[in-house]
Length: 351
Image 1 (cartoon, one colour):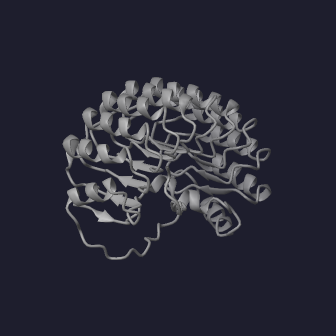
Image 2 (tube, one colour):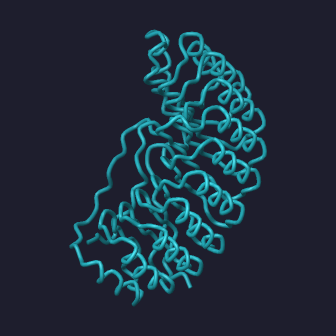
Image 3 (cartoon, one colour):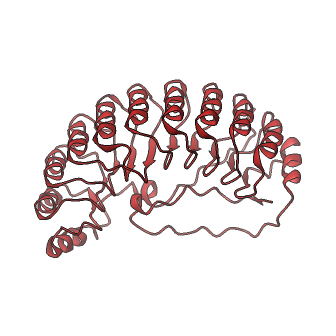
C-alpha cells in the first residue's frame, strides 16, 4: 500500500540539524493497491509525480514489477522505497530501469538489504543515468565493497548531487575509496556519512581532508559518529585553508580535543566560506571552547553548535549560545541544515 504525492523525507539526524523540522501540510490521499500505482506509471499518469511506497514489504518481486514500468516513465520524479526488503535482484532491476529512465530525480532505498552486491549492481547501472540527483542508500550493509562501487559511480556520474551513505559499516578503507573519487567528482554537493561504530577513526577523516583540497564542488559534508580524533580533525581544518567551497561541516559525535578545535578556529579566521560547523558531542573543553568564542568575535557569519560537550564551562557555552541567536549566522544554509528544500517538479514530461 502507498500514498500519492507525499514527498520523501530525507532521514532526520539530530547531529546534523540545529532546529526542529517543520512538517509540511499534506493533502489527504486515499490508499491504493500497489498494482494500481504500477498501472498509473505504465500509462504515464501525469498527476503521479511523487510515490511513497515505504515500509510496504514489496520485496524484490514487487520492485522488479515496478522497474519494468519505470523504464518508460516520463512523469514520476520522486520514489521512496524505504524499508521494503529489497535485495540484490531488486537493486539490479531498478538499476537497469534507471539506466534509461529520464524522469526520476530522487530515489530512497533506505533500510533495505542491498548489501555489497546489490549496491554494486545498482550503482554500476546508474553510471549511465543522466537525471537522478538524490540517492539515499542509508542502512544497506554495503561494507567496503559497496563503498568501492559507490566510488566508481562518483567518478562516472554527470548528475548526482546529494548522496546519503549513513550506517553502512564502511571502514576507513571504504571511506578512502570514496574520498579518492571526490578528488575529481564535479557534481556532488552533499555527502552524508554517519556511523554507529568506530570504523573510520582518523584515517578516514584524513583521506577526506586530502580530497577536500582538490574538490571544487562539495558544499555540505556530514561526518558523524566515526570516532574521529584530533589528528583527523586537524587534517580537515588544514584542508579548509585551501578549500573555499564547503559551507556546512558536521563533525558531531566524535572525539575531537582542544588542539584540533584551536586549529579549526585558526583556519576559520581565514576561511569565511564555511557557514555552519557542528561540533556537538565531542571531547574538547574550556581551551577549545575559548578558541571558538574568540573566532566568533571576528567571524560574524559562522554558526557553531557545541551541545553535549560536557567539559565546556557553562559560562563559555552560554556566551557561544547567545551569539548563535543572531539570525545572520549561517544565513543561506538554513535549508541545507534544517529541512530539505522543495525541488521544482518539471511542468513538461521528461522524454
